[in-house]
Image 1 (tube, rainbow, N blue to C red):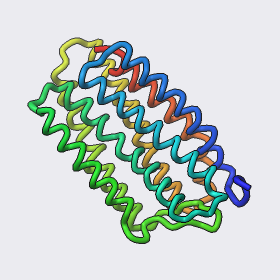
Image 2: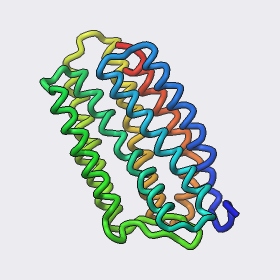
Image 3: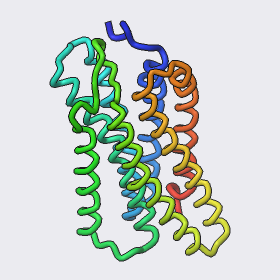
Image 4: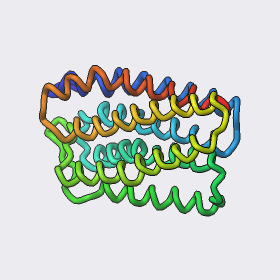
Length: 234
Protein backbone atom coordinates (compact mmCIF):
# COMPACT_ATOMS: atom_id res chain seq x y z
CA UNK A 1 0.00 0.00 0.00
CA UNK A 2 1.23 3.50 -0.82
CA UNK A 3 0.14 4.96 2.50
CA UNK A 4 1.27 2.13 4.72
CA UNK A 5 3.83 3.37 7.22
CA UNK A 6 3.83 6.88 5.79
CA UNK A 7 3.24 9.75 8.21
CA UNK A 8 0.23 11.95 7.58
CA UNK A 9 2.12 15.27 7.39
CA UNK A 10 4.42 13.91 4.67
CA UNK A 11 1.46 12.68 2.63
CA UNK A 12 -0.25 16.06 2.92
CA UNK A 13 2.91 17.81 1.69
CA UNK A 14 3.53 15.39 -1.18
CA UNK A 15 0.04 14.87 -2.59
CA UNK A 16 -1.92 17.96 -1.56
CA UNK A 17 0.61 20.77 -1.18
CA UNK A 18 2.89 19.77 -4.03
CA UNK A 19 -0.05 18.91 -6.27
CA UNK A 20 -1.46 22.41 -5.81
CA UNK A 21 1.98 23.95 -6.34
CA UNK A 22 2.52 22.04 -9.58
CA UNK A 23 -0.71 23.50 -10.99
CA UNK A 24 0.02 27.01 -9.68
CA UNK A 25 3.64 27.13 -10.89
CA UNK A 26 2.63 25.79 -14.31
CA UNK A 27 -0.08 28.44 -14.66
CA UNK A 28 2.31 31.23 -13.64
CA UNK A 29 4.97 29.98 -16.06
CA UNK A 30 2.42 29.99 -18.90
CA UNK A 31 1.24 33.48 -17.98
CA UNK A 32 4.80 34.81 -18.01
CA UNK A 33 5.71 33.17 -21.31
CA UNK A 34 2.57 34.59 -22.94
CA UNK A 35 3.30 38.14 -21.73
CA UNK A 36 7.09 38.31 -21.97
CA UNK A 37 9.72 36.25 -23.77
CA UNK A 38 12.69 38.33 -22.71
CA UNK A 39 15.77 36.66 -21.21
CA UNK A 40 15.01 37.56 -17.59
CA UNK A 41 11.44 36.31 -17.85
CA UNK A 42 12.54 33.07 -19.52
CA UNK A 43 14.85 32.52 -16.55
CA UNK A 44 11.90 32.97 -14.18
CA UNK A 45 9.83 30.58 -16.28
CA UNK A 46 12.56 27.94 -15.89
CA UNK A 47 12.51 28.56 -12.13
CA UNK A 48 8.80 27.72 -11.97
CA UNK A 49 9.05 24.81 -14.41
CA UNK A 50 11.95 23.10 -12.64
CA UNK A 51 10.23 23.47 -9.28
CA UNK A 52 7.12 21.87 -10.78
CA UNK A 53 9.17 19.06 -12.33
CA UNK A 54 10.82 18.35 -8.99
CA UNK A 55 7.43 18.14 -7.28
CA UNK A 56 6.06 15.87 -10.04
CA UNK A 57 9.00 13.49 -9.62
CA UNK A 58 8.52 13.51 -5.85
CA UNK A 59 4.89 12.41 -6.29
CA UNK A 60 6.03 9.74 -8.76
CA UNK A 61 8.62 8.60 -6.21
CA UNK A 62 5.97 8.10 -3.52
CA UNK A 63 3.69 6.27 -5.96
CA UNK A 64 6.56 3.97 -6.98
CA UNK A 65 7.58 3.20 -3.38
CA UNK A 66 5.60 -0.09 -3.25
CA UNK A 67 7.80 -1.49 -6.05
CA UNK A 68 10.81 -1.56 -3.69
CA UNK A 69 13.04 -1.09 -6.73
CA UNK A 70 16.06 0.41 -4.97
CA UNK A 71 17.88 1.76 -8.02
CA UNK A 72 14.74 3.25 -9.59
CA UNK A 73 13.51 4.84 -6.38
CA UNK A 74 16.88 6.31 -5.42
CA UNK A 75 17.31 7.73 -8.92
CA UNK A 76 13.84 9.29 -9.04
CA UNK A 77 14.21 10.78 -5.58
CA UNK A 78 17.65 12.30 -6.22
CA UNK A 79 16.44 13.91 -9.43
CA UNK A 80 13.30 15.23 -7.73
CA UNK A 81 15.23 17.08 -5.03
CA UNK A 82 17.94 18.06 -7.54
CA UNK A 83 15.45 19.87 -9.80
CA UNK A 84 13.93 21.68 -6.81
CA UNK A 85 17.32 22.85 -5.52
CA UNK A 86 18.68 23.60 -9.00
CA UNK A 87 15.67 25.73 -9.94
CA UNK A 88 16.83 28.55 -7.68
CA UNK A 89 19.80 29.35 -9.90
CA UNK A 90 17.32 30.62 -12.50
CA UNK A 91 15.69 32.86 -9.93
CA UNK A 92 19.17 34.29 -9.27
CA UNK A 93 19.83 34.69 -12.99
CA UNK A 94 16.50 36.49 -13.32
CA UNK A 95 17.78 39.25 -11.02
CA UNK A 96 21.27 39.28 -12.54
CA UNK A 97 19.88 39.75 -16.06
CA UNK A 98 17.52 42.49 -14.88
CA UNK A 99 20.54 44.35 -13.54
CA UNK A 100 21.93 44.39 -17.09
CA UNK A 101 25.26 43.11 -15.84
CA UNK A 102 27.83 42.18 -18.45
CA UNK A 103 27.00 38.49 -18.42
CA UNK A 104 27.25 36.97 -21.89
CA UNK A 105 25.10 33.99 -22.83
CA UNK A 106 28.20 31.81 -22.58
CA UNK A 107 28.89 33.03 -19.04
CA UNK A 108 25.29 32.41 -18.03
CA UNK A 109 25.49 28.87 -19.40
CA UNK A 110 28.70 28.27 -17.43
CA UNK A 111 26.99 29.51 -14.25
CA UNK A 112 24.07 27.14 -14.82
CA UNK A 113 26.37 24.17 -15.49
CA UNK A 114 28.55 24.87 -12.44
CA UNK A 115 25.55 25.28 -10.15
CA UNK A 116 24.00 22.13 -11.59
CA UNK A 117 27.17 20.08 -11.07
CA UNK A 118 27.60 21.33 -7.50
CA UNK A 119 23.96 20.71 -6.67
CA UNK A 120 23.95 17.16 -8.06
CA UNK A 121 27.23 16.35 -6.31
CA UNK A 122 25.74 17.42 -2.98
CA UNK A 123 22.89 14.94 -3.30
CA UNK A 124 25.34 12.17 -4.18
CA UNK A 125 27.32 12.52 -0.93
CA UNK A 126 27.89 8.96 0.35
CA UNK A 127 25.31 8.04 2.99
CA UNK A 128 23.87 11.53 2.77
CA UNK A 129 20.38 10.14 2.18
CA UNK A 130 19.07 7.03 3.87
CA UNK A 131 15.68 5.41 3.37
CA UNK A 132 13.34 3.65 5.74
CA UNK A 133 11.78 0.27 4.83
CA UNK A 134 8.81 2.22 3.43
CA UNK A 135 11.14 4.52 1.46
CA UNK A 136 10.79 7.62 3.60
CA UNK A 137 14.05 9.59 3.07
CA UNK A 138 16.17 11.00 5.88
CA UNK A 139 19.13 13.35 5.47
CA UNK A 140 22.34 12.89 7.44
CA UNK A 141 23.60 15.75 9.58
CA UNK A 142 26.44 16.27 7.08
CA UNK A 143 24.04 16.62 4.14
CA UNK A 144 21.81 18.89 6.25
CA UNK A 145 24.73 21.27 6.91
CA UNK A 146 26.01 21.13 3.32
CA UNK A 147 22.56 21.95 1.94
CA UNK A 148 22.13 24.88 4.33
CA UNK A 149 25.55 26.21 3.34
CA UNK A 150 24.78 25.71 -0.36
CA UNK A 151 21.45 27.55 -0.26
CA UNK A 152 22.82 30.31 1.96
CA UNK A 153 26.11 30.99 0.16
CA UNK A 154 25.13 30.22 -3.44
CA UNK A 155 21.45 31.21 -3.52
CA UNK A 156 20.18 33.36 -0.65
CA UNK A 157 23.08 35.79 -0.21
CA UNK A 158 23.69 36.43 -3.96
CA UNK A 159 19.96 36.89 -4.65
CA UNK A 160 19.56 39.37 -1.79
CA UNK A 161 22.78 41.16 -2.78
CA UNK A 162 21.82 41.62 -6.43
CA UNK A 163 18.22 42.47 -5.45
CA UNK A 164 19.55 45.27 -3.26
CA UNK A 165 21.61 46.58 -6.18
CA UNK A 166 18.52 46.42 -8.38
CA UNK A 167 16.49 48.28 -5.76
CA UNK A 168 19.05 51.09 -5.68
CA UNK A 169 19.04 51.21 -9.48
CA UNK A 170 15.24 51.63 -9.69
CA UNK A 171 14.09 55.23 -9.52
CA UNK A 172 10.34 54.77 -9.89
CA UNK A 173 8.60 54.10 -6.57
CA UNK A 174 6.19 51.58 -8.14
CA UNK A 175 9.15 49.47 -9.31
CA UNK A 176 10.69 49.59 -5.85
CA UNK A 177 7.38 48.49 -4.33
CA UNK A 178 7.14 45.57 -6.73
CA UNK A 179 10.72 44.57 -5.99
CA UNK A 180 9.86 44.56 -2.28
CA UNK A 181 6.97 42.20 -3.04
CA UNK A 182 9.33 39.98 -5.00
CA UNK A 183 11.82 39.94 -2.10
CA UNK A 184 9.15 38.97 0.42
CA UNK A 185 8.14 36.16 -1.93
CA UNK A 186 11.73 34.99 -2.35
CA UNK A 187 12.38 35.03 1.41
CA UNK A 188 9.21 33.03 2.00
CA UNK A 189 9.97 30.37 -0.60
CA UNK A 190 13.64 30.00 0.38
CA UNK A 191 12.46 29.79 3.99
CA UNK A 192 10.13 26.96 2.97
CA UNK A 193 13.11 25.19 1.40
CA UNK A 194 15.15 25.52 4.59
CA UNK A 195 12.14 24.14 6.44
CA UNK A 196 11.82 21.22 4.01
CA UNK A 197 15.48 20.27 4.49
CA UNK A 198 15.03 20.26 8.26
CA UNK A 199 11.73 18.37 7.86
CA UNK A 200 13.53 15.54 6.04
CA UNK A 201 16.42 15.54 8.53
CA UNK A 202 14.63 15.74 11.87
CA UNK A 203 12.42 13.28 13.75
CA UNK A 204 10.67 16.14 15.57
CA UNK A 205 7.00 15.23 15.23
CA UNK A 206 5.76 18.66 16.33
CA UNK A 207 7.81 20.48 13.68
CA UNK A 208 6.71 18.04 10.97
CA UNK A 209 3.05 18.65 11.86
CA UNK A 210 3.42 22.43 11.90
CA UNK A 211 5.44 22.52 8.70
CA UNK A 212 2.94 20.27 6.94
CA UNK A 213 0.21 22.82 7.61
CA UNK A 214 2.05 26.06 6.86
CA UNK A 215 4.37 25.01 3.99
CA UNK A 216 1.61 25.24 1.37
CA UNK A 217 0.50 28.69 2.57
CA UNK A 218 4.07 29.97 2.45
CA UNK A 219 4.86 28.53 -0.97
CA UNK A 220 1.62 29.61 -2.66
CA UNK A 221 1.96 33.13 -1.24
CA UNK A 222 5.63 33.26 -2.24
CA UNK A 223 4.95 32.14 -5.81
CA UNK A 224 2.26 34.79 -6.25
CA UNK A 225 4.39 37.55 -4.71
CA UNK A 226 7.31 36.72 -7.02
CA UNK A 227 4.96 36.73 -10.02
CA UNK A 228 3.06 39.92 -9.17
CA UNK A 229 6.22 41.60 -7.96
CA UNK A 230 8.50 41.32 -10.98
CA UNK A 231 7.33 38.31 -12.95
CA UNK A 232 4.22 39.70 -14.59
CA UNK A 233 5.73 42.77 -16.19
CA UNK A 234 8.39 45.43 -15.77
